[in-house]
Length: 49
Image (cartoon, rainbow, N blue to C red; front, side, top):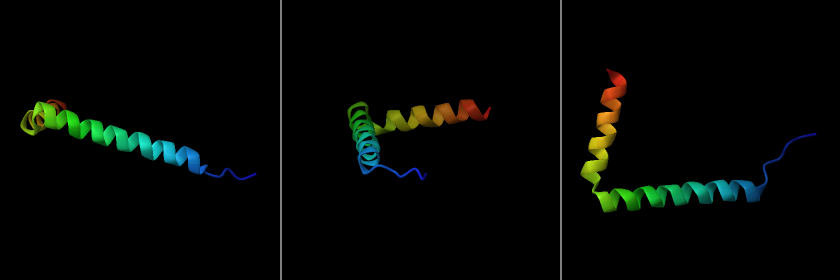
């Protein structure tokens, strides 16, 4: 018995990813891209050391 991907499930996953992407862009726009980039770089530097 093969498991088949249900179109509804993949559509929900794509919708969730799209909402996360839009939300992330909105947050970045509201807080300022420079602050977001600075936070990301700082977190990478802390992980690296």
